[in-house]
Length: 467
Image (tube, rainbow, N blue to C red; front, side):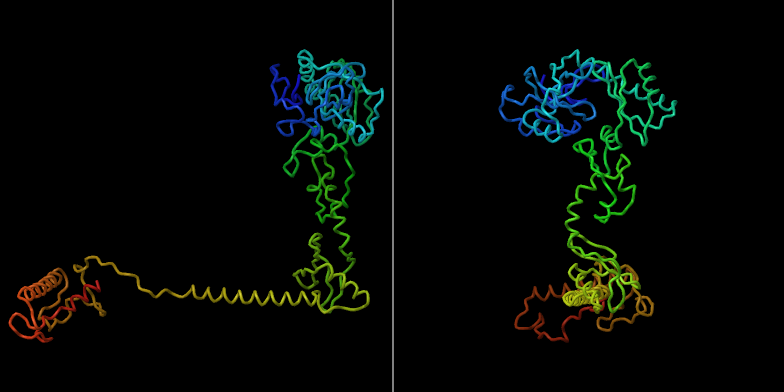
């Protein structure tokens, strides 16, 4: 039986008793993190015969618990195979999590000696073994709820988090957490009499409880204690102070109710960066007054100071702060917090900022100027509408044009007269062109002058353009 059989969706039995096929990935989970405390076997591709491999195998059980067993029968095992192993007073079923030379390194890391105390692997688990294991696991949740009721009736100050039944259904391990020592002798008698199994009570810490139950952290990823973190180191509030974090218990605490383990991940980096930061015990003295430390940027090497009567914080480099502290020790006071180079940079920046402000003001004023360009007027037929002059009078009140002897009247009559005039002028030009005009004379032989030219009605044209 090969392949990854270590979770409910890969090589395990469903609720109806059918075997669910998995990704069949020998050497690691193919779905990316379905197991707890996965181990990547980077030597799995090496061609080794079973006889040449290290005979100790790492086997994983429920909740990420791992133990070492010896492959005395020389079984051909793959990562994820279900095996029947020897346990005190019975047998249990686990899954192969690691094998080969990496197991030797894990044993050295955990301080486990390779001696006769390491128990053996009986055989690969078959279908009847897996069906029996599935039936045993179905007892865990009802037993958990019933045990919590018994604990509440007995008035014990303890929190039951998980139960694990042995594969042969002869033993049950109860995992609990408590602040103080608990006398559970009466509890063991009641549980053994009700469930007819041998009872083992195992106390775990709150971090181990969160690792067994699992969950999603505030970062959006699975809990470190349930995926890869196996050793829990002490975490103190000084780790948060070194990293300039606010001491807010709701933000610094994890799901276990203790300080987050990730506070220790970058602590060494912050401690190394703080070696160049000077220690400011009190306000620094300047001619302008006393300036107090408000904020420190550890990685940029910048410290922010502010005067008592001002709301502005001044960024100062670490080198400048050291110079001011040395001057204060000698009894001297600098003129300002900034150095000469910082003052020059600040003056250049202010000059550039003023130039930019002037340009913004200039272009903003130009954009506010009104647009005096006239919009183009429509050329629609508007001769039928009545016209008014500046005094509000109609176009009919105008005096008749003395040039052509016709009166310009408003309404339809005015429009028809203008049309007739333009037609007459066009007819005259056509007649002149038909008779042939030569040497600057008209049809009658008279010379062309401004006096005998036909007068055009400019006033009617201006009226048309005005409309």
